[in-house]
Length: 494
Image 1 (tube, rainbow, N blue to C red):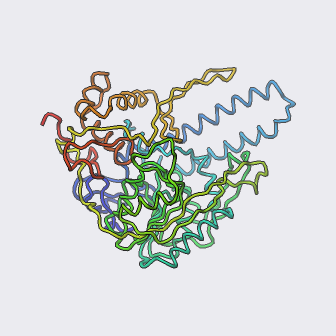
Image 2: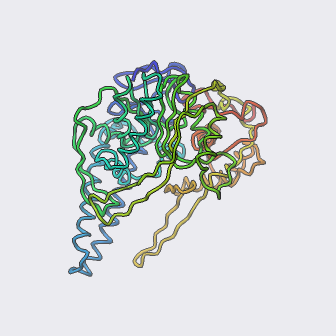
């Protein structure tokens, strides 16, 4: 993709090619790496690259733990009827681990000579709630493909053929295994896939380049599936790693934006970003469970289709098409008759950008002293939780810490757990940001002012975990936040 269509996720300025493949903001100087042609547009991209490699460590740990447990069982039960399944499980896990290491080799090569940078923000910005093993199931779904994927893809293509007025470019948010991206790419001059998982995009890129993929599906009893590449590699694809709430594309650049199984939380921010990047009369096509909007009672779950469409209309979209679509998730019965499947009624709709909203306000500026006077409040609809789990297995006791956002559970290290605990406990809807920061310092949480503002900006703008009671009408609009590579954060004492 040409850099003239891209903008900095920090300050919104133009992006220029830098060196052999990286990108750099012409205004704030922030550099965004390119790994095997995939641009990394995250708040702290270098630190986040190390975070992606943690996936290997986690998979290695899970394999070794399972290997030890099952090996101990076989030692005690050498003639067990489970022996064959145990061998298949361990073989499948080991093969997937080798594949992950192979696909992450470009990350390792890029980072040679760099020392690891680690902090709460770089950790949080790469959390997807889905492991690599889990994502391999979507490669089977998209590229086998399953009948339900073919049916869903036909819905997208029908709307594109009947209602798309301009076919210059399409953007798929949450591209994942890239099956949908590839399926619709032939209708457009340029097709852009955006996802938060670099290992997943590297795997999809390798497959689309013509290399068969052998995977072992965890939810199909670790049975093997050989996935064939497309007969003709696409010529017009661009893959980017970015958060869907902070896309590195300029205003009004996309003819169509497609979302599939979008997270039901932080939907207002998602809609605002989709509206921003859509060209006038551009289409948003969505296939997802019911959305949850700010202020919705969490106990009600997602809205029904009519309730969602009414809200979407208020956000600058006019309805083009809608229906309830029945979709079977994780249908692996062709390789394992006993694998379970989940069948859901989910929402399909197409909406056209119909009004111009104020998308130029950059109200969350980290170098604006007024931000310290904002009053943060936890978003009720997110049902946020911090969990300390102790598991007794009979042979050992395991401790695990997790951050929960509705139904999503993210493992979180001890240091980050205590930062999150102190931060969320200090946000009571009454304290100003300056008072929240002072409260963290009093609890021996060592964060600089810039690190603190970056974290709360990320949690508000890209995660939707925090809302603000504005003390100034500049602070209640969606906006971007600036990274540490942008102008310095204003002191709260200014």
